[in-house]
Length: 326
Image 1 (tube, rainbow, N blue to C red):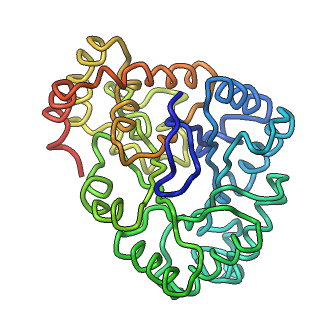
Image 2: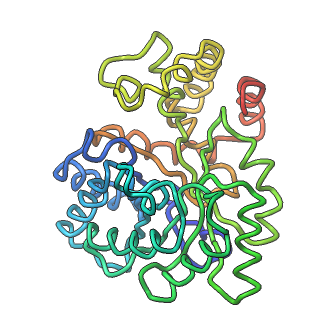
């Protein structure tokens, strides 16, 4: 396993990490989660990603229960969570959904700590930006969470570069804890934000990336070339919004053209796609997902392709996919 610094911080995270979006509670129970976390940890993965909204808090509970069962030393693993959407969707929960106001954030961290069963969370993210709350209010609340020892680092997820820079500048001006990392979607068909919009932030503020969806929700595995298979992520009712992109004819045709390259390099389509993301030196860690142990083990095989992604191989991949990327 490779380990990389999280942006300009001193924290080192594994090049591949394991996330719980969609799978925990919906497809993975505590027993399966324990098995996969153990296998990931044994393979050198030290970062495990989560969010308050995943399975309405159950994902945090399952991950926390699995970690307790495994009994790992606290220094040996990094856990994250994210805040914005909240747990309650009812109309009277106006200060606990779709917001980053101080009241919500200061209570949300306490809820996560209870569900995880931890004394602190390593990384906390603002899961989306909130146009209705002053950035200064959000930045101060996140900084206070760290000052109180409830979290160690904070960052953003899917924020515009201008908002990240504004948050960093506010924190710098007041002597508050600054945002360290961003969690954007990044894969062969979704590149602009990581490669262009954030370009100045890597050098200017030392932004680190914990990227998600390296397989484009499964599109880059090739499994959707003939429609949506039963039991896949695209077949889940709560994932129906993904189906049009998963069955996009042009992108699936491009995926088919990538297969010979993956075979030449001694890997699968999925391993090629994950390795391509990890090849970007700006990426601190690639968050992978798995609903069963065999998927996790297959994803780990991407590490063997990193050195094989020569400039020539990267050029061939770009020639197939770059024109279809947003």
